[in-house]
Image (tube, rainbow over all chains, first blue to last red; front, side, top):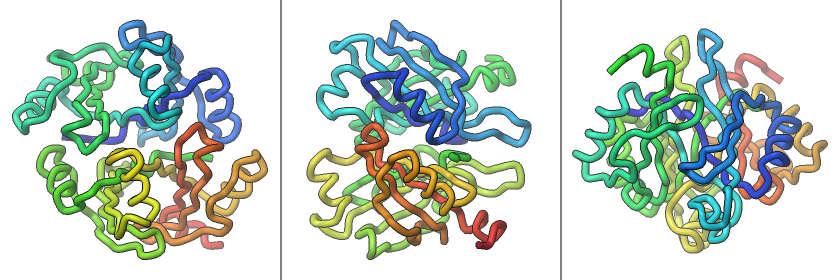
Length: 148
Length: 148
């Protein structure tokens, strides 16, 4: 089901400072910055690796909460800054969600929603994945390649 | 400096059960199981993605502590099961360690040590990387390609 590590989602208090850190120290490149009101975050995607055709395949996703009552805001209040979730690539999100549900995993999202870079995403409940908030990601590229 | 997400290290209480879960539900494949006495863990590496030449490029690393007084044992006692660290690929570990130190990051490992699958690794202090225990990984493949 999982075809790659799409991204590691990292909660931080100061997005601009962390972006500067990952760029200057680790040599990563920002490919997208956006505000996701639905998820209550301001976020940056930084490319970590390129595939055989030069396409980005993995990212560090830095997440700053829009407020203390958002999920990421509560996460930081409870556990501090750090890894918030792991996003894995899937070829077919709807099929992967159905398979996860059939395996007894709780879906946080009953239907796919919009993620970074035009992707379709859905989260699985961390209580069913050994404490790991797990995101399934069908990239916009995969969506175009496999309409429907 | 970072060339890919090498692995996500996930702390768990029951390695065999978690391996079975990631294999059966997520379709991953175990490529290595080993005991690392130095790090106090029993671990499995499961391949998530293949590169252009069919080589493995990213892994889920499942970690079961050998005892409660090990770093991973203490992590689970404090925070529960979940993401323990993130490992990134680097082309030249010694150069990357020197660059990290020059940038003011504390190295947990003053010298490279042995990681999974024959890799050379070093950990950076999470307090300097926004709460993320960060591992630099020079794979055995890269080591062979760049002797010295």
